[in-house]
Length: 377
Ligand code: GLA
Image (cartoon, rainbow, N blue to C red; front, side, top):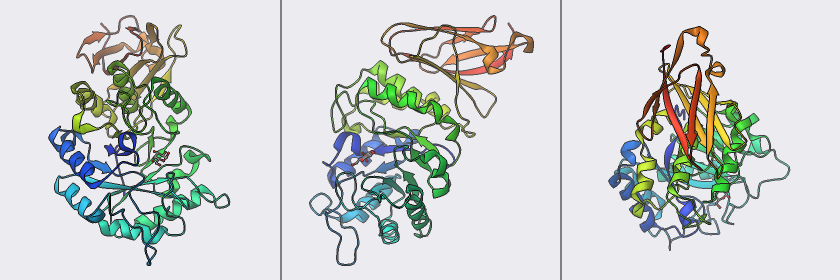
């Protein structure tokens, strides 16, 4: 499976945790279409942990819990496909999944075949209860190979949380995306920590294998399985902007059946998604503002059409001012060029004069620009 831009979709874990069932998944499939999410690119619907029985059957095959999924997973996959969506499932490289259900260790090929027979298009593969002796890279290579030989095109989503130097070997496993951090929670501190942890990992992102910063918490407002104190809409806007800008897969985690209009507007901003899905998928570069503290992140990214994406993210609880010299972008005054800035959330257009870009930001707010190179004003 070659995935050329970051995968987009919805995953059950953040909101539902173990409380998943056929009805919820079917309703989510309906909502992904009705709310226009599929039309914006959110195509994978992924059932996370806790979908199976605790024991395999006599043929060593995984068994869907009949109370949760009375018609089995093939029926769910068929419904999801009938909506124009793709269907994702979950397993683990260990003996058990993180929630204690059977993992795929020593059953990789039989499980890959089962998933293929059910019509699965995406497999998230976790790292709990894994062998202390066999290196993680071998475990992920096993399942990657099993999926590649399953007879179906199945996107392999590695979830080893960035441990054991995942970034050094993950591209050798056939994975199209890889979790580069621990689990997200619906708090500003969690979002901030995950964003900062990416700093050293950006060079490992790129076409075909994307740094997965974990599922989005946009629109959870403290409810659901990973909902703690929750965030406000400004924080969710900043969260989504960073994940999109950094080229992370965009997997929605809130209950989209009854999501707020604000959350829907954030998750469907076309210009933000366009930056995320830019075809060359260049890594973001961290820039240094003048007098900007630790909580003001400034990043730039080359886009395929010659534009730049520039992101200014205030992670702090106070006002912040970005003063950025364009020299760092390769645009000193001597080039005779400057930037026309299009802010993608407000639509505002501004120009950089004297090679220094200024932007004031309220607490937790961000600005995200598509910047065009123009002649010096
Ligand atoms: C791990 C993963 C999560 C989720 C749970 C399920 O913690 O990182 O994303 O899949 O397991 O148990």
